[in-house]
Image (cartoon, rainbow, N blue to C red; front, top):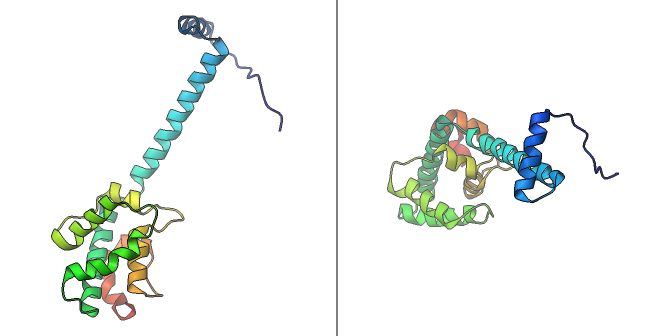
Amino acid sequence: MKKRTQLNIAIDENLLKSLKFMALSKNIKLNTLVKQILSERTNSEISSEISSEISSCYSEKDAINFTNFMKALFEKKSQQLKYSTREDAFKSLIPFIEVFDKWENSNTKRLKSILLESGNFLNPEELNKLCSIEEYEGPIYSGLRNWVGSSEFPSKKLILDLGSSLIPIIEKNI
């Protein structure tokens, strides 16, 4: 592929004068300034597109449904396996989640507070961070599925749509 060294564009005369003046004031060549401005603008646009995609993937409802499913599944499996305490059940679950590169210690503390200590829910930003929309199921989803050991685990989409109401339906498979 041949490297392009020239970009022919027509711009307003006043804009060109402003760019030349800006280049002179920064003591750099006009082409260097234009490349710099284009690079900054492109990177800014890409960053804002990525952040808007990330922030809009999952809704508040999705986060609540996912959290409700996670809590109900944790409770049901803890009872089935007859852990003496919920803390013991959590200690059994967490190694299945912590194996993922995307997982951080702060996430373990947050998950523990959700499952053991409070009525808090994952918020949409946390769900977006830990469960991407596309190819990756996320450490919590994958960790729960592996901990439960079910070959008929519901899809992430089904969990987001139905939440904890799935537990009675899949109870025989967990």
